[in-house]
Image 1 (cartoon, rainbow, N blue to C red):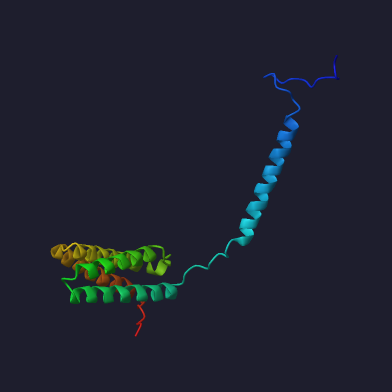
Image 2: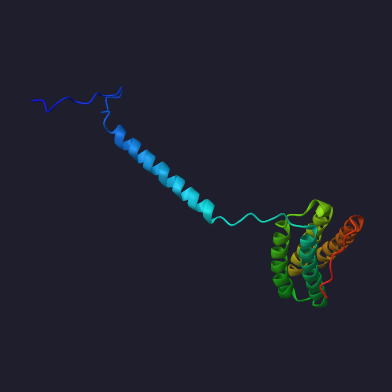
Length: 165
């Protein structure tokens, strides 16, 4: 009562016929993955050209201007810890944005100083929000010292931050 020849069994005793559908499914899956990958590549934004020194200087100008305004505003309202807390949150965002800026080789040293200016200002504002006036003053002094270092690095490279006014 045989219905015909049976397919050979593999070493595990499984029938060999399911291998064909598995191969077809594998091919189909790989084809779908290749299609998705090619669509993603086609939809990817174009590669941006490298940032120029002038581009960096413009970005540094706006970051420093906003930072100085924040320092001045909080300094003019020393007992307003809520204001310092708000300005602290904004300063954190500014520091994060600055860290993502790709610095051209001509301003690598200045970029590190810019990051330190922003970090020290952020720490000063955090201390102000917590009412730690001594720590706030120390970190603000460090930020101002680092800004002088930033300007020295730019002077050495014969560059200058553009004025926004």
